[in-house]
Structure formats: structure tokens, C-alpha cells
Length: 463
Image 1 (cartoon, rainbow, N blue to C red):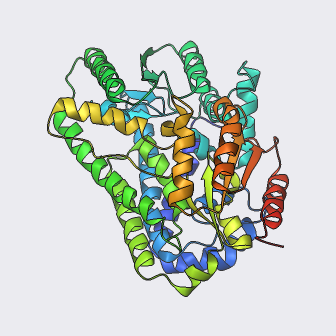
Image 2 (image 1 turned 30 degrees about the vertical axis):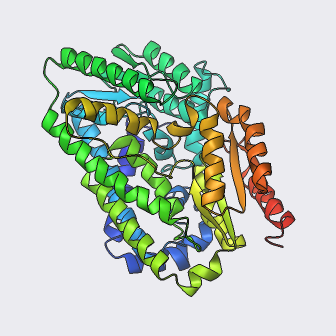
């Protein structure tokens, strides 16, 4: 598959602008998705729908309400503006910093530079279709990037090699959370001819670990000040931190409200906020989306509709990323009344950052990144997974757990037995999906859905 330079970004910008205009009329959009487009895309990928299917799954696969679509509009605008700013910076010869997904990137943006991360190109790739992701994986493998590396990294590396990402003028990576990311960072360094800074991150997150991380973040700031020959803009960073606190405060409350029975059923949209954490959590768009999700959640918990009560038959915990091309949250809702009450990426328990001093802000930003979904569970000791899962099962009245054994994710594969033990202790069944988050050749969508169907039927939740 041949692509012109930045073709994927340009197409995504056009598509997202069109969708954002359509979402100005949420009632009309809900009707269009629910009765015309949604039923045709939620069941399977076809030649006719594969170019739009991923985008529709992000919007709820035809089952989203007008209120939910209104909240998602802010996500859509944030996405295309970020891409527009990147292309503009490249065209103007301005600095672009490519950072690893576990780096507190708001510190870098306080130097008034554009930022991007290779992981942005993973979900972005599905704005083309699933064949594009496969093509990027093959390109990365042809260049020697082995199959045991997580495809989250290989799709990104393939996109860089395929010139779908504006070339950065600086790389900033981190030593956590997983060995696949560390390996891909070294390959990025090898492939590039620009400077590469590695942020040393802590193994744990106790007081001394946060102190260690804060010291290393100060070292990163010193490096950036030397690199750009200017000081960090503390006023800009303070405003960013204030906004991040607001963003996280809203999302914490939405996460907690999902303990209610019935759940407000917003897990899919909370999962979308993971991308905002990784890109521009300090933006007004992020705050607007989180605020609207909270308004919806409060209303549904205070006065749950009969439809909400009747829909929820099974309460599900999802662990690890699901396949973006066919996000199954809405599929299991439609067929089994199974509602995801909390998941790996979208759950938010991030504490407020103390803004009383520069030192407390930097320390708090380090903790923020360590406590962000997926990073929170995959760096350090396995107890980060087991203790959190045990807490979720108890507090969210879970009926079952679905965990993705994602190809190349050695940490999750190693944790499988530990997860089984936690589920057995609490008396809830667990389903493990051997799959890949980007390569549809590993296990087909039909095979994965059949496994899910058998799991629900065998536990008495379907027929």
C-alpha cells in the first residue's frame, strides 16, 4: 500500500473536521449512526465499511446517545487540531519533539514547541482501515523489528518509516513501562539523526520513588533549557497543571460513579480520554469533554432510566487495550446486556497536583504520569495489577473479567496466572482473549467474538 507523505494525517484531519461539523447536530447524528450506519458496522468488517468502521466504534458503533456524542465532539476537535499544529510546525521548520507515551509531555510543551508521540499513529492508522495497520506492521518487520515486540510499537515505527509522521527535531523517551517500548525507543534512536534524551523512571511509586522521578524530571528540564537555549515557561506550565487537575477531577468522579447499579455506562468514552492524557490533557477540549461526561454520569446515577436498568445484565471489567478496529464494548452490550463498568485504560484515580511551588508541580507531574491508565498497571511490581483488579471486582460489583493477551505484551502474558488466582478468589469467571490490538491476522474478529459468545453462554448470560 503506497501512501504519499503525511497522507494519513491529512485524511484524518479532513474526516475529523467533517465529523465535528456533523456533531454540532447531535440528535441528527444519533439517528444517522443508530439506524443507518451503526447496524452495518458493529457486527463485522466489510469492504464497504472498513474505511469508516474504526471512527464509528470510537463514537459508540451506533449505540451512543446525543449527549455522549456532544461530549465526543471535543475529542474530535482536539485530535484534528493537534495534527494540524504538527503539520504547520513541520512546514514552518519549527521544533517538533517526539516523546514516548510515558513521558510527562506537558513539561515539554511548556517550552512552546509542538509535540507528538508514535502511539498517536496507532489509532490514527485505523482512520484509513485495518489493512493500513497490517501494512505498517509488515514494513516494520521487513526492517528487522521482531514479531515479539508489541504491535503498538511496530505500527508506530512502520508509520515513521512510511513517512506518515513529521520528522521530529528531538526524541524524548523513558525507561518504562515495558521492554517493548524500551526496545522501540532504541530503534527510533538508531533510525534518526537527531538528539535523543532518555528519562529514567522509577520502578515503584513510593515516596522515595517519586522523589527520584522528580529529580530526573528536573534533569530533563535542564537538558531542554540547554537544548533550546531558553528557560521553561513556568506560567504556561502552571496553567497546564491547573487544567490537568480540573480534567482529572472530573474523570475521577465519573470513574467512581460507575460503581452505581446500574452503571452510567460511559466506559467506552472514558477509554477515549486515555488518548487525551497522552497528548493534550491541559487543553480546554479535554476539560469540556470530561465535564460533559460527568454531567451525564451524575444524571444517570441520580435518576437511571428504565432502559439503563433493563440493559445492564452483566457487569464486566476489561483489562488491557481492546482491538480498536472492532471495539467490543458496544457489541457485548447489544448481544448480552454486558456493560463494561471499568477498564484498564479509561479508569482514573489520579490525585491532584500540588501547585503551591515549582518543586511540587514537577513532583506531581511525575506522579500523574505514573498513575495514568496502562502505565499505572504495567510498570513495576505485579501487585500493581493484582491489587487494582481485586479492588475493582469488589467495588464495582463485577460479574466477570475479560483480559486481552495482547501479542508482544510479555508483562500481561506473565500475569495471566496471577489474574486467574485473583478472579478465583473473588468467585468471578475470567476470559482471556489471545489477540492483537492491531494485527487482525493473529485471531480473526469472528474467532474472538465466538470465544466471547461461548464465554457468556457458558456462564448463563446468553443463548
